[in-house]
Image 1 (cartoon, rainbow, N blue to C red):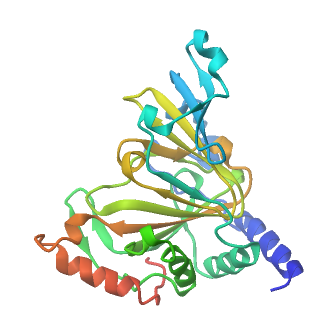
Image 2: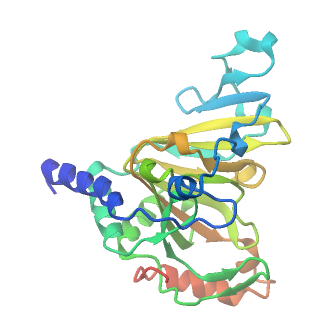
Length: 293
């Protein structure tokens, strides 16, 4: 694919979001579509509360830089680098330029060849994975036929890193964000019964910021996610900190491709769920998957 083809493909990808402008929100979740039609006030969001300390993660400086603080006496500390462990924010690994622009265009073209479904908070989604009932803690293979073929080179590249060779994703969730819909995702901790230690997300088409927050520490941390990067979330950041994407941090079409592995409950020999865990991993790595309905 030439540079001109890459540029053209990216413009088409960025423009394709305009073709679907409907609402999939339920309950308290809202997007620009339903807010305008229902006259909903969305000005108050969880991450806009008064946090005692606000930091930004700096990969280059290997630590946290204070960007906000309710304690006026510590104003002079802004810009100084703080070790992540000082606030219990550990388990983030960011790999910039994980793929090329050419690879991105090819991946997005493959993604857009499958149907999108309207989702919460102005997002659209595509799911490749089993059918869980999180409330009852029941899991079925359902219509899961594996991860899509275009994801194999991504997983192969991850497996080139020694500490990720054991990473076997059994779910891929593609989420599309667009400013025209007011897309966001509310602060949350990913399920721990089904999903394992590492969450891996490939960031496509535009830069954004992943916001982490800890009520126990009264701290908020901004993690810049450049286009073409991969973020790996594990450890304390995975289990003790909520994370989300604020509407104000979506500046163009964005696609997040998130891979999840199984928890130990589905991988350990002494567990009853081992067999279904093995079956899901076998199906996933066939890379013949179609979007789950």
